[in-house]
Image (cartoon, rainbow, N blue to C red; front, side):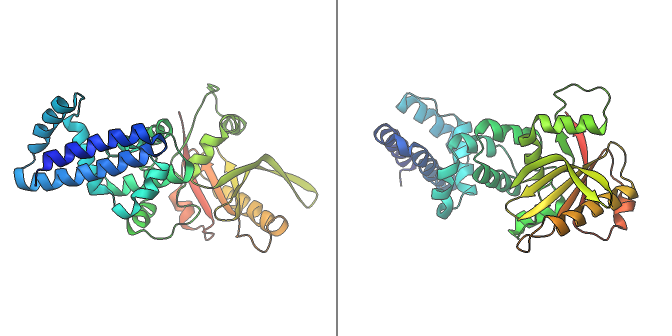
Length: 296
């Protein structure tokens, strides 16, 4: 088989397709690069890895357009990563520019994570780059990473990052709970993305009446994917045992007064300056999650 001529034909046909059918440009790109990657792999088995450098030089000369060894290696990596069966699904949501970012990552589970959030949240390339830069995958719990590798079902709290990154766009020098809340409210979409998928904002300082006294939940959210309310309490200190008791009361109040029979039980997130694993060891309510925050 003349691998080089087949690769050149694939690329030329793709250029023609993109000019004639602009609406299918992305699908054509991904299919072409998948096929080229497959041919490069087969050629490499026969002629060695150095064949990519040779083909890069020949393609650049014959097609009068630069086809770098880096690009060809990415096509090879795309073929090794991608399953032909899911290619149509990927081409509907992700472009080659997305994969150009993703294929620099040498961890398949990590790539899968970012592919999934790109599909679910329609991330632009710029947004994807920002997520990778903020080490979103690295801030996932190890149990969540294991579930992703094994393709197991996940829960609402599995994708809550640790630490949670909060942007200090208001340049507060002294951080109080009120200041922390204002920073979050300044960019609610960014905060919700730190928590995972499906989170929506209901209200800050949500009032609840217990007996004759009013209490105020720092942030009340809802997760539409898991069909449950989410109570968030903000603490600028290390986690204390009274924080557990407080959020548990708030969660039980929401369950009793807001939750319907078709909704799942409320979960609670305590966002604090420092975790205390010894306190959490004796917390029997698995609905309560503790995360640290970091200011950016």
